[in-house]
Image (cartoon, rainbow, N blue to C red):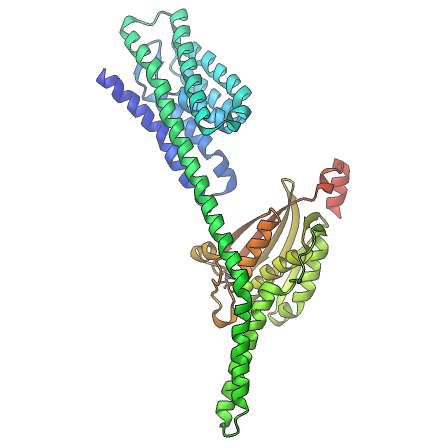
Amino acid sequence: MLSILKDFLLNLFFILIPIFIVPIWIEEKNIPKHIKRHLLTVCFALVIVLCITIPVSSDQEFIFDLRQIPLWLGSLYKGAATSVFLCFVTIGYRSLFGGTGFLVTAITSLFIMVTSIALAKKFLTLSSKHRVLLAAALCAFSGTLSVVLAQTFHRIPSSSSDISLAYLSVQPICMLITCSLKEMIYKNMALRKRIIRAEKMEAVSHLAASISHEIRNPLTAARGFMQLLEQHHLSPEKRKQYVRIAIEELDRAEAIITDYLTFAKPAPESVEKLNVKTEIERVIDLLRPLANMNSVEVKTTLAPFTITGEREKFRQCLLNIMKNAIEAMPNGGVLQIYVSIEKQHVLIRISDTGIGMTKEQIERLGEPYFTTKGIKGTGLGMMVVYRIIESMNGTIHIESEIHKGTEVSIYLPLSSNFHNLTNEEKKLFMAL
Ligand code: ADP
Ligand code: MG
């Protein structure tokens, strides 16, 4: 009995490894999206193979193991495609071992596949507790089904009946444990994300209040040094020094205004339909002198997609990103702006061939006052960008390599007009 328990625990261990490790991997930003999407499915397929290879008990006809747990979990949480894939992995791999058990596996796996496809949508809308209970109940049912089928096709030898009894009770319990842990881990991850977001938003609102202070400080300093200049007995060196400091302080005030308030209007703006192409061109015109000064070539591939948002804020956001890109290329380079559609979202990709960023710098991006530009930087530009994109229900993704360049991808929901077009019209529109 003890050895059976040991084997069940080993199977449970196989199942728990991806449950713990995959969410941690997925949180890593460097893993490509398509790998993230299929990681759990592949891990579950491996677990199924491992469970069948190192089972709780096996004889000529039957193999007892916990393979139904990853099969159920993958199918219920990840949907039809995963379900079909895992079902065929199970049947395919089990077929290598032969015996009556193969037939039982084929029938129960197909049953699990069909049931989970029918239930998956509803399953995900249930509360966490109900999901755990339903998964355990389904697992108990499929376990019973396999034992009954096994008995029907080929009497389970009496030496294995202990195991089949243990199997009937242990499998649902293991499912209960696994599913509860999975739910707990995902709940914690979601909570952490919410806290980080709330913290960022709080920082932003504090900042809005302190921004006038930020501008007032350099102005007061500049004013002070101007007053000092009025003194008659000043040496020419001192005079020069005071003028330099006053100019630096005024530059600082100007930088803050550019990063935070260039397009700010006293009254709140109204949300309107914006043509992405027009807005980008407007901002490029504004930045052309800065680009020329840095010998930066601007290349564009634009399309007139429509999004909804506040015009001035959207321009401010584009300005801050493009200004950073130009500033990252002090010795010249190429600023490229590319617009396309991806999964009902407008993608605006702004890339430069500049100095790039380290991983730590990317992580700190958007933090108020984070700058690597010393006195010339404000550390407000990207924070404003994040806030604006968030308010437009968009997302932002940054890839950067040191000394190679940076690529900022903004995804914004396409304005509803586009959805109403026919496919032909969409193609025509995209060709513009
Ligand atoms: P600032 O431009 O005033 O420093 P930002 O919030 O606009 O403040 O940017 C913060 C920091 O992020 C910059 O100091 C810079 O180190 C880094 N950064 C932003 N965009 C880029 C880019 N395109 N290439 C390299 N570094 C960048
Ligand atoms: Mg900036």
